[in-house]
Length: 340
Image 1 (cartoon, one colour):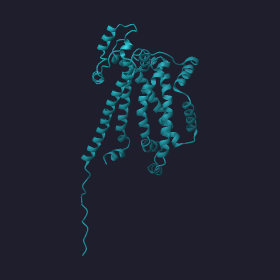
Image 2: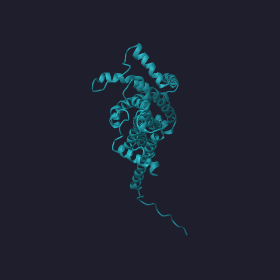
Image 3: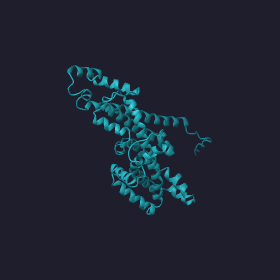
Image 4: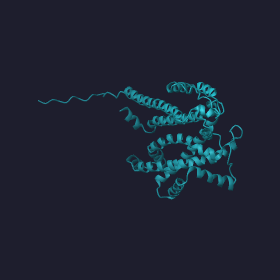
């Protein structure tokens, strides 16, 4: 007696799209949850930095010949004798309302001071990132597609020379060549965009080139290595066999898949660039957060340093979270892995 197999269903049950969407949403929620957890840990670490500094904020405010009554009044005003947890809650409560306190030296609002300085540093960092990507992506793609050719050899030589040159040395060289010898660009100072747009961008050229040069090296080497591996994969070789145009193979089939490392590093670099403007702003006398931090450290205005460090860490966390949420847009396979 034979038993016949059950016939296959005429209409197989489709995959439950609602479950896949729910899993994708849980993945995004997990990324956002990690962001807030790390943000909490960062606020605690930044607050404790001020606690670990020898002495107290009162020592930076009062003169050396301050009387005992003045010291006691200042300690009470700034809550120095309160428990650490109470001071943290008071501080974080003000931070959540956009109030970082007042400068010990100038008495001005730290939030307003940063609001005046931050646009300068952010503009320099963002323009440096744009210039670095605009140069690195085409050079890296073409060098991977035609290794050993003229562009590849020239880019390799420039990369080697740039790696051996620190950013501050490169900035000084650019100042000497384009500002002193050729007299093509202004060297020092800052002009707001509202006053003179042309002069504003002229003063940005040298700082942006100084910061972008180092990132061009990193992006080009990273993208070239990933592209060379991707161009040997089966789907790219199949696209070549079908006779697709070279630009379409490079852009749609190879570049998109090779962008994961580039996107990851870009998220880290943008935060590093904002922190890296300290030396560049000092070289070119720019009124950004870099010079603000240097002056605050020299004058022991620790509450300003605390605020700038917190904002820089917040930018790092935001960029890393955005990078994590961007992966599924670059490659649908990431969505499938996360929803599996």
